[in-house]
Every structure is written in structure tokens, then in C-alpha cells.
Image (cartoon, rainbow, N blue to C red; front, side, top):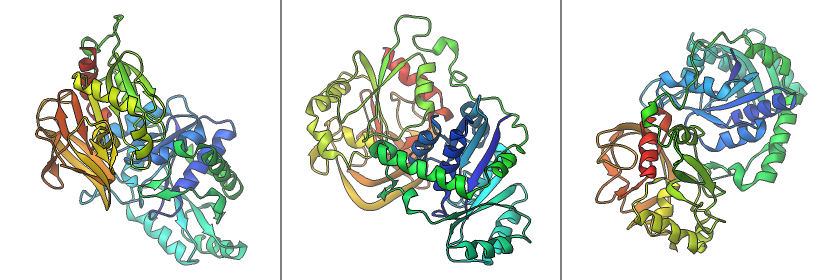
Length: 454
């Protein structure tokens, strides 16, 4: 039984991240153990959540992991906590394109049996707020909107008008926040700048968010609402559940394969469950920074390079020639290498004209076009992550292109929403634009760890 709230909004840009992060930080600073969660595939917001709470920010994605895993993954992350705060994605009822409520904040709230707090941008309205909230509260009887936080309120008079209008809606106002430039976080081509790239400023921003929420919100009312959530009735997800004891590489033996995981400012996109799965599969994961470290961790048997912003650091990554050569040598040896999005670019011959690792016979560059959306894909051939025919759901999010877009042996055949092949498989390398969540297919972690042990 964990008290819990979902922080949602009518639309993107309403202030969900500010309110959710500020609430997490304010409650954590009051002495509560707060579990942070984010609906959808976003990697950046969870970094701010982790800074606010001191715990890993975890994603809840009903498309990539399936609705049946949402509550177990939530219970896994929230185990032992006093309270969980879940930040929504987009508008409350917005989900995967063309698939109804799937992957929407509303669906996740229902799966978690959690009350919703609606954050409304009230900057250009007064009485209309009541009609907006009434519509959202009555749209789906399965979604319980238990309170409203009015954001970007202009003045005391404006707040009074808003509160008066809300009196007949039956949804309590649990906060009113003024505009506060000090809580703003800088953005660029893929959203907010990650915490790892601006940690001192991010610490100050989170502190300002906490102060704003503490002064403008009814924390006791929000806590009381969170405690009305009924028992969840879901067993916590266990990373070992999909890994039978006989298949856990290195369990009970002296040989634990070392898997190097790229981190640092250039590679900030990862799901907390991935290293947990690799550890459950018997591997030892070691983080390294391709911007600073000139060698891979000692004894590296395999390599995971997730998403991030190599395009921002192309010159610095290129300048670290010793590490680029070490990565290329590891790949040539046939060792398993799993690269997603940013990792794909790093393994290319070049990125925006800067030499990269040269593992792939391809060149990458920045593009003015945003590629964004969920994908359903199937493994084209056996590789270090999956056997041919394995179906998996993922997500693409980038403003770069790589030419060619697929090798002679592609990583995936995308079957929805369009049909195409993409990515590269060669020896132990699996490189693709597709971000995946291994909790949906734990055998991916098992297969990768087994390959590293060999």
C-alpha cells in the first residue's frame, strides 16, 4: 500500500514537470521517502525527479511494456516508500497515436488506481477554467480527478476569480502558482537539457520548484488525497522473474561478465530496469564516460551505449581517439555491443563530419526534421539481443539521420506504423535508432549477458 498521486494536465506546456518535480522535492525535504515516476518513454524528466527525491526516476510505459506491467513496475520502484508521485505525459487523455487510450496518462492512472491532480495553465482565462476542469473530470468516469493546481496565475485578483469559478465544479483547488522565471529549465531540440549537463543549475532549479510548490500548494491536502488511493493489488516486478535460475549467467560462479554502460553528459538516456536486468542475469555493470575515460572499464566483455546527445558533444567525443579505438577493437572482436540512437551515432564512421568509432560503414548528421513516435518491430535475424522473429515495441526520438539507414543485415524490420528496415547487425553489434524497454522482454538481457560471458 503506497500513497500515490498522478500529476496530469489538459495539454503539454501546462507546467506538469514543474509541479511534479517541485512536489517531489518539497515532500522529500519534509522527511518523506518519495518514489518518482514518469508516464511514457521520456528520459529527461526522470533525471530531474531523481535529483528531487534521491531515488531513480522510473518510467511507466503501457505501449512498450504492456498495460499488465505498469502496476508491477510501479510497485517495484515504490517499494518501501511513503508516497509515489507520477508525472503524466502530454494531455491527460493523449495516448499512442491511433490506439485510443493506450499509453495515456489516464490509462496509467486507472491501472494504478491513483487519484489525479490536474495542472491547468490559467494564464489567459478565468471562469473558463471551471468549464475546462468539468469537461476533463467528466470525460472518463474511470479517471478520478481529485484536485486542481492553477498554474501561471497573474495576481491575487486573478486567483480569486479562478477559485470562485471552481466552487461549482466539485473539484477542490489544491494550489495556485504564480509565474516564476527561476524555476524555468532550458530546452533545445529534444526538450529539456538533461540534469547531467547542468547539475549545479539543475539543483538550484529543483530547489526553486520545491519552494514554489511549498508556498503555493496545499501539501497536506495533496498528501490526504494521495492516501485515498486503494490497495494496488499487484506484486512488485522482479528483474529475475523472466530469467530462470539455470539461465542466469555467472550466478553462483566466479565468472561474472563485465558489461560497460556509457554514461556522462553525452549519454544520459537509460531505463533504471536495464542494469537491474543485466545484474539479475549474472553480469556486472560498470558505467564509463566516453567524454572523459580513455579506456573501457577493465575486463569489459560487452558494451551498452544508450541514448543521449552525442550531436552536442561530437567534437569532444571525436577528440577522445583512444576510447574510440578501444570501442572499435571490442566490436571487431565479436563482443556483444548494444547501441540505441545516440549509441548508433557514436558507432558510425562520422557525426556531423567529426570522426566517430567507425564500427559502422555509415555517416550521421543533424537534421531539421524531428522523428518521433512509437514503433512495433521484429528482429530480422539472430543477433546479440534477440533471435529472428522476436517482436518488440519501441520508441524513436531524434533530429539526426544516418546514411545508409540500414546495413546489409538490418537490426529491425519496422512493421508499424510503417513498413521498413532499419539499423545494423554485424558480428556482436546491434545498433538501431529504436529505444526499447527490456522489462517487456527480459530474455533480451539474458541473451546479451550470456553472449558477454562467452
